[in-house]
Image 1 (cartoon, rainbow, N blue to C red):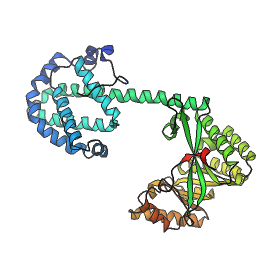
Image 2 (image 1 turned 60 degrees about the vertical axis):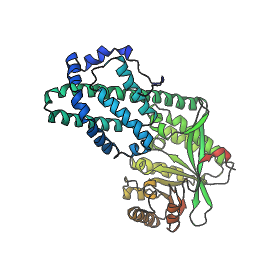
Image 3 (image 1 turned 30 degrees about the vertical axis):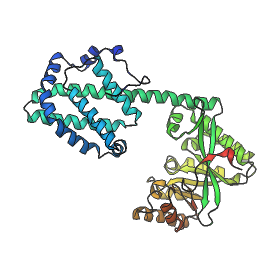
Image 4 (image 1 turned 60 degrees about the horizontal axis):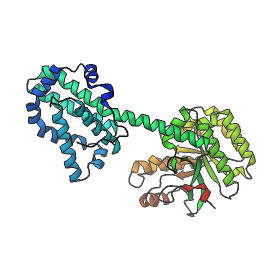
Length: 407
């Protein structure tokens, strides 16, 4: 079986095998029943393997993970060993440690928890059918007990991994606040007609002091909000971005959330920083379309405030499915930033093409500019270049880089 790592390894000695079995009412009678079912299970093994792999290859992750004959062969041997161990009658310390090792391997290779759950559901149903067909319906409770025990143990490392990751992310966020660790990055936005850089979008990154790397905050953003660290991070982001761009001639955009525009202290801080900028009219605030609909009155009030400084407003992820068009139009945005989900397949999707064209027409009607994000390959770029879209942005054109490097 696969070797276990010590990082998340679960000590079943600390909890006691007897306690686990007691929790599931797993008795010596269940052990004997399952052992007696081994010949039936072994006979069904070839059919199970064939059906199992037909099932799991419906998952894209399985296709990525099981991507060579060698890997598939190893996986098949591991599945066969695990399947037969359900009926081994040997449910001791070694048995549970092997399950833990399998779970740790799943986490290491990034196997999603829902994939594991789906695979278990398949095996459970397959074995149910086998036992019923063989006339062993009265033995189903023993089968369900061992399956439930396996599923719980194999899910345990996911829970430990999640807890470890949560603790680690909280530490990273707190360290970023304590050590002024917010690192603004910028991503160029290009004029679709001239091909020149029109302005820059500011993106929040944070320094991980533990390994001296800079990472995106996107996967920690909700956590930062839940534990009330977000505003401190955002204040750093605003301050650093404004200070740097006060020395530069370029227009730039800054992403704001509903928390930013609804928080009185955050808005006061923002207006103070705007008043210090040599030319605040070069600032555009990007607000998520989904955030706009939380409270249009607050959004409208915020927009009125910042427009007194000459700032502009972009609705981000426009067309992502939340639009209340009447209210959005009342806000009179200067830019509609078209959602990346509509852009990514625009070269091959007639539906996406029509939806984007409709957004462009709406923008023209309200005298707003359009920005297409997620320009990730040449085909998408070529398609958008022929459309009446004002600005383009994406990894095909340029990747984000530290604001400190912008001259």
